Length: 128
Image (cartoon, rainbow, N blue to C red; front, side, top):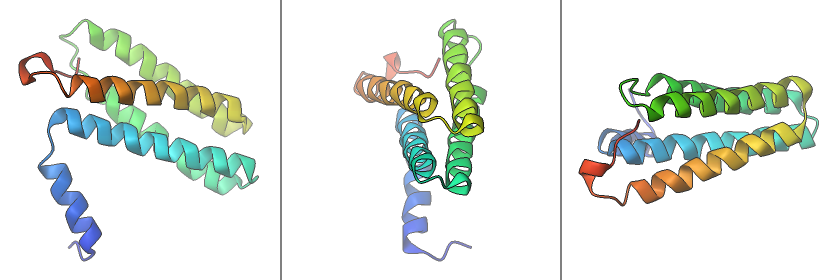
């Protein structure tokens, strides 16, 4: 049972969002977790870095699993998501900010792209 008003709002917004809005929410979450992971590395707080980079990896895995293989673009997106995941693993294992920052750049670009795509008419807007 959801008790918190924030959790009720969050659940409602997920249930009423379009696919493009859900993708943007996923990218927002991944970006937030990568930034927190970078903070953890900077603070030499391995638990914080591991937890947050792991959460970002979970989101990337979800993005990979939702790709529609009947679209050619899905293969390219899968490869890019796979590379982002690799960067996050490297950042987490080696505690090197540069890998996380590169992943953050890709995630930010994807978010911008999906924000633009969400403005297109619905018939042109599908997740590969």
